[in-house]
Image (cartoon, rainbow, N blue to C red; front, side):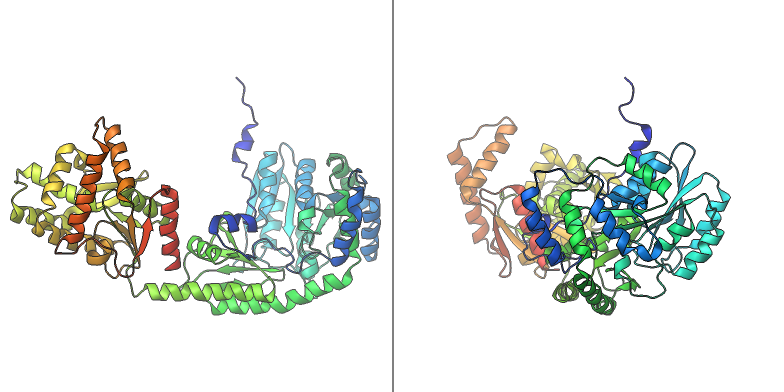
Length: 602
């Protein structure tokens, strides 16, 4: 059967938007979220646009003006100083549609896309969607466009046909000046189409910032993109426009879908253009808060790239956690920022300028997580899970370790390893002294290692993960655990293994009270005797065994009594442990509860 899709689509990656507020609230159980991730206007849409939308709703059953006549006329008026005509304007479902249409119209077999990187990721997506090569030129040391290198690349390769230039650039916020663009166009081959993406133009207050409209008239193979998603506050309505030579505009108009911009979007855009006060307020707010936020992030240990947009690119340094941990910690505090690893910037986040209170909330959240990290330095990063047998400690410990990235120190595996070595050496399980020697030797040879999603157990270079789970090794481990010589040696081994890794999860019956009384997180994982009896019955049934429920239940009750009454370290929650009852709960619910404790502890 022939392939379903064109081969080049296998490399196509979807655009990853900022995390929505609703998803963050569902996932993290937070409210009143500060979204500083998607470069939206924190002041919201123009009040005039809102009113125009309300008035329009009763006409929602009618198709929109496919040509956008009135909006185009208003845009002609806006750009009259640069001689823009209606025939040069193409409306789009946001500028993203126009970026895609330009790729479809201009790139074909034998053509190449020239692209600075990192820049807006949708440019790269266009090349992959069209199945053409991308010639990527890295940004310079200041994270600005290297225009001389781009001009040289275009001159050296006649297959290069299209170049997108974001000014200011996203995600860096750096801008190109009029003088820089003048010099660049003087060196660039005249047949290369340059698309100036000016999504954030209205925020820029630097007098050296150029208006790309002038270049459309002077250089026919220049296109300018503008959007209503940023300063105009209409991101959800999806409307933007291109200004191009009439020849290019005509083809884009033929390619676009019919009714690609809704009547609601056109009505709101018209009203927003007439609300100069709202635009001025948004620009003034950004001019005041952008440097204030940059200062605050710098004072909190970030390296901040200078920006002229409504966002900042900030690199983690010093005591700050790595980006995945930072992002998760902020989400748990109800603040959304934008990790930009998909741009190759693995140590950076992009932060949108919010309202003053939102910006302060971000800085306060960073203060809080840094304070927790400093407090954590006084305690080992240990998650200690105590509790009776059958409560689910082992399974939950594994899940917590997997999801937190911490090492897992498997207490049961340690005892089974002693039993395995004793069997191999022919040592009696009743000889406490010799078993104590074996347990002490494990401090040198025993280690745990994650492989293929499994916590593997090694004695030296030998993987004994399967060998310690044989019935013989399991029976021996139960016998050796009775000896105080073994328990004493393995207690010290547990401490060594826990401190050997940057952080670890340990489970047992006295991890938080005896082994790690200073653990960062302590949870006493328990369940009712009836619940544990039912779980034990299920385990036995899966192994082909049948036992009366009353017998299994009685054995659990008796064991609980013995554990709670033993003279040395009776089984009970540590004074500062959180009791987590797993009765009637899923493993995911219990695991998330433990992870929440870990994140609250820093």
